Picture 1 (cartoon, helix red, strand yellow):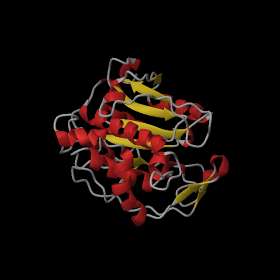
Picture 2 (cartoon, one colour):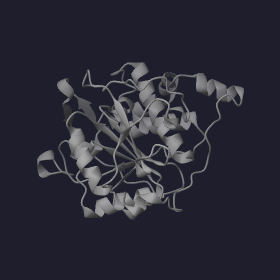
Picture 3 (cartoon, one colour):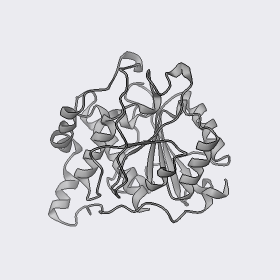
Length: 291
């Protein structure tokens, strides 16, 4: 593993607020007991009124998409801000200007719904009015401790982005790879080896602390929202390939967590399935901010 991965830097951003402690008070107990469904009815419905559905999936997992409009990034203000990684696509995939933009899948409703839930569940000061889209080589990335990269089956980082991701992880960053399945693993693995040649993803088991950092996840035997029969596998990226050491990131293989978030207020998926996707996402954030 490159030396950059070996040492956690000291420039990791600090966020105000804290996680509500379950069972500490009757109010906190009620928050823990409520299902995410109740929160969605009160909070995420507001998102549905404010945002039009920018993406819909057709049969067989295909995606129909209008021309994408990207909002300006929000300025850094110390709040937890959802950061989405942008990467260049081959021309055949539509590029940045239009078409099916892989890195933008579930934008912006996925992150809006998720940050609404984060605000309802914790006292972490969360940016709700917007999110950021950054490249891996953007110096501003190191201000944000957690980043999400969607559809890594199409991710092909250049040399600057490879160095940028190494630097981000070395300074304490945590990255989540989401929304890829089947043979798309091959490209993800190939590109990841360019960044960390010795790193090998390790399947996580239910007893890993990330699945008990806020919610106690009862099962990770989950299915992809569209590709029925595909069993989700959650891979951990560990320092020195040692599960006892620092968890650098997670790859949600055969799963699409943010797809459940995006359509959580439309009844497209069973409520229980959407709830589990929210719970796992919340656990990722709490784990990354407190470990």
